[in-house]
Amino acid sequence: MGNSVPLKQLLQKEGIVVAPGCHDALGAKVIESVGFEAVYMTGNGTSASAIGKPDLGFLTMTEMVSRARGIVSAVISDADTGYGNRNNVVRTVQEYEASGVSAIHLEDQVTPKKCGAMSGIELISIEEHVDKIKAAIRARKDENFLIIGRSDARGTKGLAEAIERGKAYANAGADLILIEMLESVDEMKEVARKIDAPYVDNP
Image (tube, rainbow, N blue to C red; front, side, top):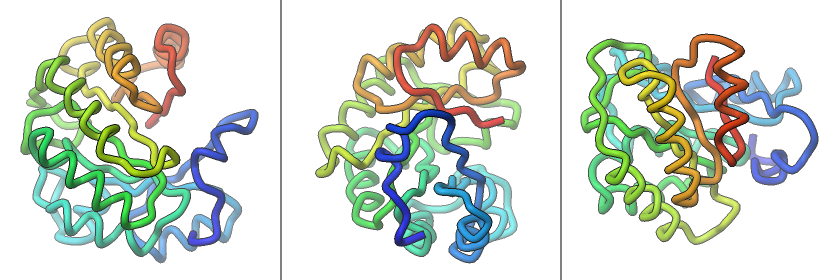
């Protein structure tokens, strides 16, 4: 997808940007060939295709960035928790931005993380994730490289907590917000209504 319009430009258009999930360059080319303008490089799919294991934090940042380099441009990439604390987040942003992708999401789970659909997920504090988001924003060189603040609180702490976290991440400067594992269209609408930031949904 090397000739695609950068994601930030796509988000200025009216309507919804649909970014089908993929895990490699060939998948991205197929997605592009049928008319989609963006793709989402999924952590679970990449882990399954690369090593045949679920998304439990087995892949390193460098392995994920290597896959991302083959896709690039209007690509949203799973960057897990930033692979550690805020210092790790800084390097994560630098590496993904250098790879050419348009955006990454950063999850508010403890490290090592789990796929958002799994049980037993543990979260870091709102304050710690806000700090990581702010570090990510300071680390990027190009404002067209977007930071998505993701929360996995819906399945563990409920919708109200997830929305509270989403608001905090938006206030910290995240360009978009992703609340994982919403359970209905009404919940999607509530999140979009209550959080003052562009919203990413992962149905």
